[in-house]
Image (cartoon, rainbow, N blue to C red; front, side):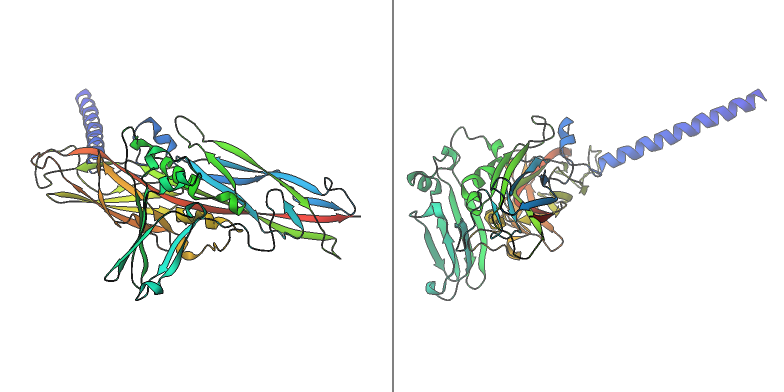
Length: 448
């Protein structure tokens, strides 16, 4: 009987050991196949910051639901104030502005927003809509207040055309508008296109002098520098802000309060109550950054045991309203091909960052249209110190109506005679503008 009991215990121990072995083996297989699950793609202790789908959240603070108008009252009696709280909850430096609209300017006057009955101040815009059979048929415009007097060149050859603005930084400095940082002195802008098809690409480049820190480009810092002087939010009555990201240096992200003061300058005749809806529009430039580990296998046909196997990677959110959701990898003997899926996971609209000025309801001749939305302009994919060749080659990604887009990048394999695979970060960052709108109902009541 004792022997039988020992045998039963031995079998139970054996069964438990077998189950543990299967579990460990299965876990090892998952790691080998690069199943990233639903993580943000960031390694280490700082990964906790790269979660969530929020960028900058703007909310009404202290805005009353009911406001009284006193007939015959003083200006102070017929006024009220409120705040807009802006909070950067994501992992990119954010530069943007808030706008208040939806009210009748004959009745309300918001301090700092002297809306006139004629055209308001202009704002910066660069656009070329189409080209005809000759230069005289060119349709479009180049209009930017701080570029008046600067030189540009236009070239066309067998249906293809190119419009370039050279040494923009020097032009701004000479005009006395911006004491340009040395790393922007030789900034060049280029528009390219084809007859009948309009603009096909927008790009910029600049010389990087000694001492330029390429790290400045990441986490929205370089984008913020471009927006600072090229997007005159104030001309469209925008209240500007610059907010630090949620990271190890500024946990929870930077927050600020924007003050608004409103005067009731007249009252609609024969009305005792007057309901309005105030719209709060928040518009800002942002960047998404992630660096998932990918598997580089110079000899994919080798039967050796390897630390990883190239495969698809599924990602969740990266502390930004636009996220990399999936990376598909295909290996050849010479290249690793990455298909990078991005998606709008936030609650607002993606705006081409060069059109952020069109967020203002008051900008002159700057109507926000469908062509300005769902455009991500500017991205970089890098392995080690090598920038990958990607398509679209102009770094302009047009997302579909569901807010989804694809980037394809190729990495030329190095050390092709090595049969051992290894893991390395695939660094990805892309830029965009983002716009969200919140509404609040306010009831105005007349008191005699």
